[in-house]
Image (cartoon, rainbow, N blue to C red):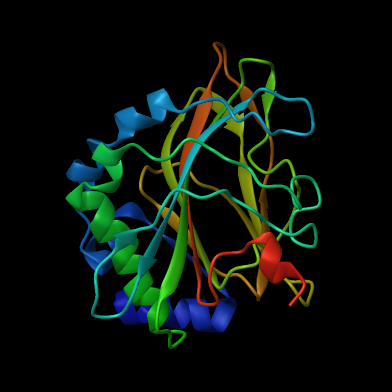
Length: 241
């Protein structure tokens, strides 16, 4: 499955599960350089906005823009916001997370990853500019159970989503489920390989990941989630338009 076949898979099914070696070959990624960034997941602050009362999630969040033929640009730090129609649990409020560390967002491997995905998605949808939100997540089982998607099966209100597994240690569960947004078909699988990625056409599928439990000692699941939207960043002012 080369660059073209990944695009064809997205067009025909609304999603593509891409192993790490294929992602590296398709997107020109340096997996060893990406591995050098994994330590930053050890420094993620706790998510203070969980409405289910849990303390199992840590995260950072930053925003970027990218244009075909142009450069990836960081934008001034901003809140993450979603309408309740897409996130019934945490929608409708501005969530100010600590930004991604400059050493990560300026790294060549990071910029190549985010830009290459923008280029791939631009093959499916002509765009003047992608508005990109990047989320570093750690879900841990210190309190017993960790929930990667406490909001349940959902869409993100964007055009494309990339869920990238960074690491997974001493956990069971965490099955990813992708279903047609307007139908009954779906798939289930567990992402286990670092830098493997699930790419999704957001309007066509809904997705979720089941809770994780520790195996022996407390475990953790680290991911990077990137969203690409053509119509600007989601924000409260735009909700009523």
